[in-house]
Amino acid sequence: MWTVPLIVEPDRLAEVAAARIAGAVRETVSVRGRASLALAGGSTPGPVYRRLAEHDLPWPSLHIYFGDERAVSPDDPESNHRLARETLLERVPVPEDQVHRMMAERPDHDAAAADYGELLPDPLDLILLGIGEDGHTASLFPGSAAVRERVRKVVAVEAPKPPRRRLTVTPRVIEACRRILVIVGGREKASAVARALQGPFDPETCPAQLARRGLWVIEREAAAELSGEAA
Ligand code: 6PG
Image 1 (spheres, helix red, strand yellow):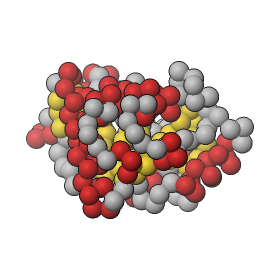
Image 2 (cartoon, rainbow, N blue to C red):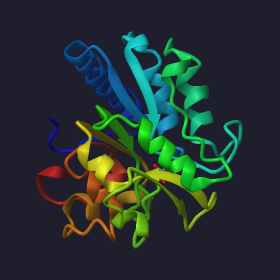
Image 3 (cartoon, helix red, strand yellow):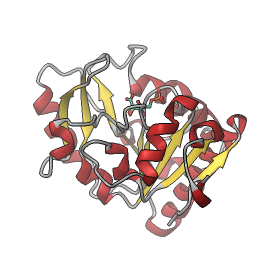
């Protein structure tokens, strides 16, 4: 398992994060014969996925999932699936039927969430996550009912920032994952990172604390408010 955060120069975030993901995938496939990997959305992962696509991995043994998705078409610029498709999935030989898209654009959000919860492996081998300035992760936002959800694995949410309607995995999925990798860049995240890793444990107000046990690969400026050996 991983321990202290990796703090890297901005121009090495993608390379270091991709190398860690590749190592975890290679190890998991060698032990289990396959690996389930849940991808994150937002703007940070794109360069990481491009670097990951350059690695020689057992791609046909991978099953790809998503930690969250916006209620938009898979071709919408805001779609996390489109991000993953353009930066990773179109570049590597993961079989189509092993890419499990979160169909958040379905009119019946609750049914789409329930169906995705059914197909999610329990546990996932690896989940990639980001963190928002408010301490959210996936689409688990501070104070939301989703952060308190203890039964369902995927729920529909109204995010405080657009695109508002989304599907997200719930805390029990993150807590069960065999490995967690969090990728963070930007000075604006420094306060949220410090709360997530070193603040009093209260995931309802800082959902990214659910990933506290994971490996955090953090751009130096986003680690600016960490204290002690983690800095
Ligand atoms: C999403 C992500 C979300 C993201 C954070 C950080 O769908 O937007 O799942 O949790 O990881 O908001 O986003 P950035 O990488 O854009 O800073």
